[in-house]
Image (cartoon, each protein chain N blue to C red):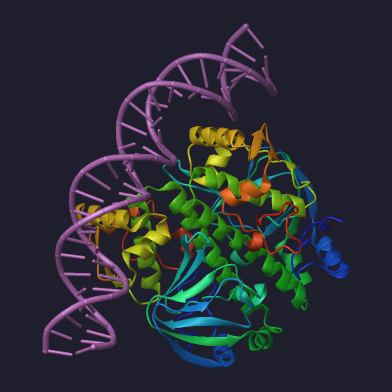
Length: 244
Length: 244
DNA sequence: CGAACGTTTGAGATGACTCAAGCGTTGTGG
DNA sequence: CCACAACGCTTGAGTCATCTCAAACGTTCG
């Protein structure tokens, strides 16, 4: 069941068995993509969307001047570019961080499946708006938090999302990003991210080492990052108690 | 015709006369809201969406610590919170900048109208994803540009959007924001915005005075703000030639 | 073994912030 | 109709967070 993890633990949007079957039936192909590969280039016309089955992907805006800003991270179970279905072409690029397994859903097949299934359509619509909600939280992060707060916020978010996907125990999880990736998420320089990580470690809030995060004091980390998981629309809050 | 301006000048998404009629028919009420009023508080359950007919609105995230980050600006002709239709409750607040005229579209009525109208549904879906594309561009702005670049980018975007709405001649337009509003969009302090505006004026790029922007050198301003209007999905590019 | 890449650390520069004060405008109530 | 409060704008001085540039180190992989 390819779509097994899709929209699990989301308030009122979980798929029925029938809907799961429909989406699985729309998959044309499952394939593997190497790590650090561009899957879709900004401006490309797209005729299928991609469900991430295993691995980590990111979406990013590249500037002619060479500036890069990550605008989204994706974990297993998420639709990476479902927004390409209504939009047809993308304003940003999409690539893998790790080696990834992805399921391809042609837009023709998707259209056929959605015909007459208004509930499922709304759930898919919702899932693209969830990404928008994350964009907003990311805006708050880079617009209003200091460097330590930004990284703390990112780690809290990834923990919550990975926990929902069954990929974090609420304490330790794989996050295969380089310090440069973190910098491109947080609007910082890689050097400064390095110093920030040391501060988080020395402050005994969390540890980041070779693509793996350990939360030492999750509540304090959440406080430091002004993190409130509400924007994730989860049914059950992350295990770690965020509110104090 | 309330929806007259909705999705005009968007590549391949303009409404047919029939669709326009359908949407207009779903409006339950048109009313006026005072300036500087909160229309929807974050976390509220919402059962209708709002088309902005006249005026300026903003969406923002407020933090318990008092930090505020604007995540969207809205101009006449835009659906301010159509995403509330699939999402049911919002992760952010919505308020007016100026006095506004808004059209209320109850979700029941909307649902009835969309039943069987897959094309219109996709256009509405698209319009919510357009907001997400703007979020991404805003992320690039605050994550990767310096203060002057951020304000320049904002002015370029607002010019392009207002031009599409028939509210900018490509040179001068109303933008009824305070310097504090601009700061809350750009992730800056109001004092620094003041200095940035002086720099833009003295560099003869643009002028901002009592809620009105005048572009003096639009091409140079766009360059300074690394502005590329592609993410707006416009059919016709803004009048000012952005590419040098 | 060497190249490429990611991480770590340092020193110095600087852009943006903080705090503080003064000015102009607007709206309002006495 | 004036006075004053509230608000937004402007400017200055000093501080600090983050950046830039540079170098060195570790690890991985061909």
